[in-house]
Amino acid sequence: MYAAFSGYHLNHAMHGCPCCVSSGDKQKIHSKELKELTCDDLSRYSYKAMTTWGNTEDFKHYLPRILELLSTGNCIIDNSIVLGKLEYGKWRTWQEKEQRVIKEFLFAWWRERINERPGFPLYVFLGINDLVGAPEHLLSRWDLSIEGAGFTNFVDFVYEYYYDLTVQKRFFRQLKEHDLCKIVSWIKSNSIGLEEGFFYFESKDEEFAERISSAHFMVSGS
Image 1 (cartoon, rainbow, N blue to C red):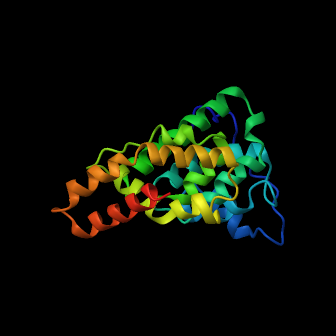
Image 2 (cartoon, rainbow, N blue to C red):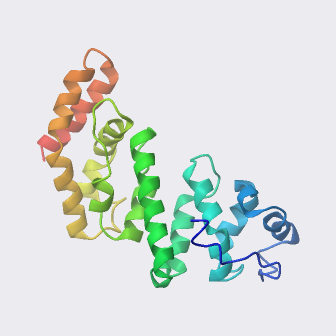
């Protein structure tokens, strides 16, 4: 990311709406080298970028650091805001190498997030899916090995959102119908893993086994 966007330099004269951007805000993003900027330094800018503060080229300068901080999971910068800024900045019209490295980053971030950290990241899933345009890109990178965090997240995904995917569609209304069908079909095709997971965890973690059982019932009963 840093190499691909190295041609966009710090703009000390970057314009910010005086009603939205203070001198203190400007000082924060100009005070350090790009790789030393913190979440606190970039939080305000991330919300205001391109709309009321700077242009697309300014955003490209800060983008590698913003995405690096975002991917750590310990940042006050909002996932959906940053991913939405890519859409706002029309990233699909950017140079080919820039588009390519953004996709590579998004897929690497998703793979690490879903397979190595517990807790299904709904808004990361939805945000990245909006940018790459097809859920199979994310589903194919999801490791469902029973002992891994990916399986725990799969159980949580089904338990928390299967009803919404198939009936209510409150969280997933932004998805096209054929993409919803792809996700539901993928869940059903991997439902045997829920049954195997139940027997694996039945004597190891009774509470989690009950959650798996409930998730399996939702899928098998639909």
